[in-house]
Amino acid sequence: MLPKSDFDLSRSRLLRKPDECAGGNRPAGQAFGLYDRDNARAAESASTFLKNLLVNLTGYRDLFTVYAAGQTEHEIYLPTLRECAHLDTITQQHCRASDANVHLMQAFDIRPVVLVRNIFDSVMSLLDFYNKGAFQTSYFRADWPVMDEETKIDLLIENVVPWYFQFVASWDLAEKQKRLEVNWLSYEDLVADKPSSVLKVLEFYGLGASRRGVAQRIGEIESEERKIRFNKGVTGRGRSGLDTRQKEQIRRLTRYYPSTDFGRIGL
Image 1 (cartoon, one colour):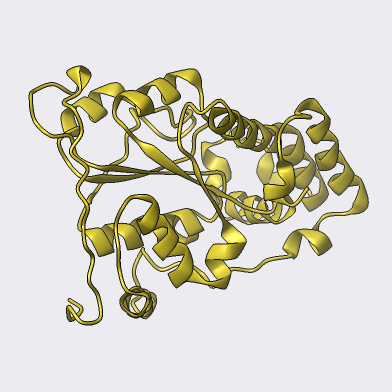
Image 2: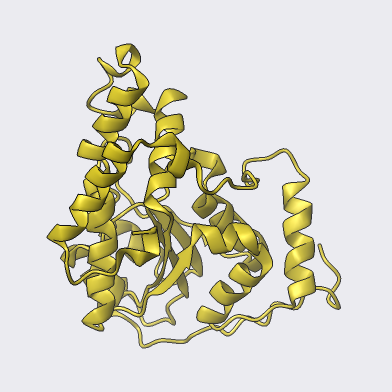
């Protein structure tokens, strides 16, 4: 527990109108939503680190609002939202801004932080992720172990990367249409200056903390060998790990979304 002089989290609890679908006439809890497309490296991913750090800082409940993970899309699950609507929660999920997800987020007043990363680096991170065992939950699990590295990367570009483009395009459109207030956060910014990134997220939700206190808490967490630690982050791997053909194959996907700003992912 940090001294108050070092860490003062002034919680601004947002009392909203009771939501009919939340059930009951009580103030709804504040909900953090971390939606990311850097789903590689599991417990070491930036989004997992950020989510667990925010849980640690705020004391809010870690809430996974999905019926089932594995091979399914991380669609927001209404029964879980109904059950926990009165609580202050932080959720981390890998999902697109589908109409159903947006409707639920509007109904429960969930304001998303969307984490993005350089797409070329993401491919290399995904390659590591699947090589370390994640392929076992994929639909190509029968053949992944016998593929060479070039074929594996091509598979990811053709089968997984299009989802990432849909992810960015969907949240970009939801923001442009003013359906949700979206706070974009880049992996690169988080790695470069964790305290500043965390403070911006807290500010987005109406919460305050001292930079010194946040930095101290991050240091304490990173010194522990536990699941909420994440690696220091390596940027630029995609420049050397992908060949010219593969990079161009990824870039060509932007032509299907001419109104979307893919500068957020290095394109």
